[in-house]
Length: 54
Image 1 (cartoon, helix red, strand yellow):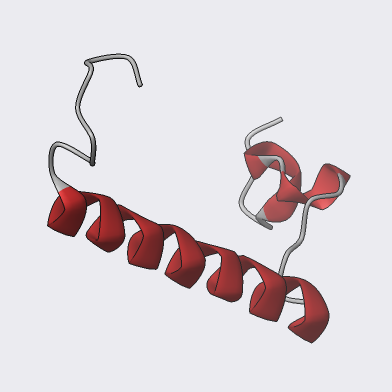
Image 2: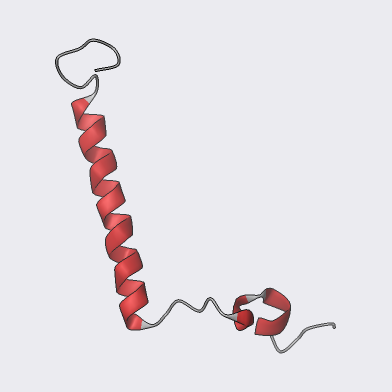
């Protein structure tokens, strides 16, 4: 270990960060399967609105 400890310095904080990571991963996978992620050229703001000034 880097600090020479036998265990983690903050195990509860480490567990909480794992839960936040898993929650984010679940939301991302859900969004990918539901098709709500629009990352094409229409995601760019001037092309994604009908009120563009260009």
